[in-house]
Image (cartoon, rainbow, N blue to C red; front, side, top):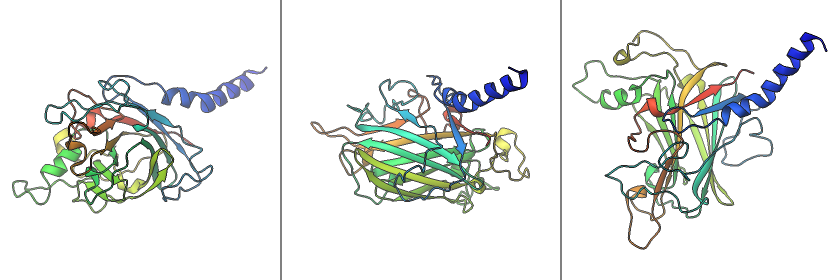
Length: 290
């Protein structure tokens, strides 16, 4: 066998098998989970339905909270939210994440196993919901700065508006929320649909909504640094959480004696130090070259 043939076979084996091994390498260290988005030339129809072959290019990542103190599949441990307890079975808010991208969009699907579906709206995070977190520049504080130093805050002479860190939410009933909500350049669409054991949430996030350049002066970025969307070979910060409302009303903030408890599960983060704004504790999403 020639050396050229051997190298070609080795490269092919890495492309076919290596990315799966890479994606499945899990760790309990906060902010160290890794997921791979493969390229697809077949745009996903955002309809809340798994069409045959539609997500075949994706590498599924299953998340369950059998070890709730550590990622992957952690349950935040917060003194203010004692109702946040691990699910009592695999049909109670475990989920599988699928990611792909094409020339213009990032696609995310989250298949949620949920034995009690609650949709009493209209606030997205007070029902069963899926939350996707994007950190384009892999620097902290983008989302927090835009929330607390936005245009509505008179104490901020230079309001923070960026595409580097944000959160998007959709409830099982289709109620949606973008945080921060002060940037019209952050656009996306989603659709949910029923599944035999729960529900499916599909997302389309245009790459033009994600900036990989740090423009936040808090982190040493250049406010005039411009915009660069993710490209093949790039890695961005990424996280997915699922809120499980089993009691209605106040979502996972409420519990009653003798009834099902609510839950909240995150793919990555720190259970004892949980805060949705801690971008440094999110995992990573790698855009695999074509």
